Length: 403
Image (cartoon, rainbow, N blue to C red; front, side, top):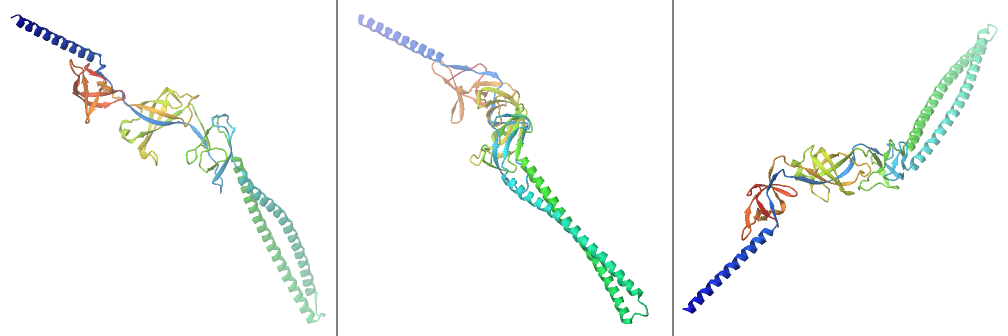
């Protein structure tokens, strides 16, 4: 009987020990669950944004290009003002090579000088020739008068043969007078034509010399307004430098208005439907990533294009204003990162992105339980940078485990 009582007592002690152990285990599991990080479902407006890259440009930029000069398509840059330098209106900002035009000017100036000398020589020669013909004409008139008088004064005492001779002399003198008159008229016309031809050459060479002089002057590029010098880019996208050749239509440099800056952006094609004019955006310059500027989209491109030959990503262009540009910091050509705010105005259930898991494409979350975490499938709506919209599966203020 004593042995049976001892066995029952031992059994009761073992059961108590087991219960105590299980209780401690449950408490420890519960404590562990309570220590796991959790987040709650909240209600609000999902903050969404589109990330893009862009480049600063001025809304008012004066570009200086090579002048349009006949038979000149390529120009060499001999001198450039330092990029970033502040210049006043009228300051020299670039000098293009003038050697070719100077050589052409020398040739045309020599031709003009020769033409002017030819005109003076021709005038003297014409005057001398006409004077000689006028003297010949006077002499021919005098000979005609003498021959005509001798013929008219001949009477019966003069032999018939002599009278015929006088008549022939008068006719010859008349013909010589007519011939001299024709020579004089022809020479006068020829002199006039020669002078007209030389005058035309003079006008032509004078115009060409003037054009070349203006062309040479135009190769000195002066600042049309005060501002800052910004170098242009060549066909490869490199900054133009001294000694480099540029072509007609290339912008050697520009003078932008730094108080009116814009951002040229490239937006991926997949985001086209979500980008609208008037949307607010944040701008961060790579040169100063600690500062954030705000702006609005003011223009959307109408044509989609490939980003580059090497990058086949389809994009479209957009332009945004900058609310308060910093004229001391901002310069055209600076690269920037843009975050376009596309938040929906309707409130939805929101949950941290980190709390959502995926299994074969199905979203689920883990909720805390007494002995183990509970897996709940959820339906995800729109996604933001830090939060997602929950359309079904969770309730407001429900707790969800974080990883």
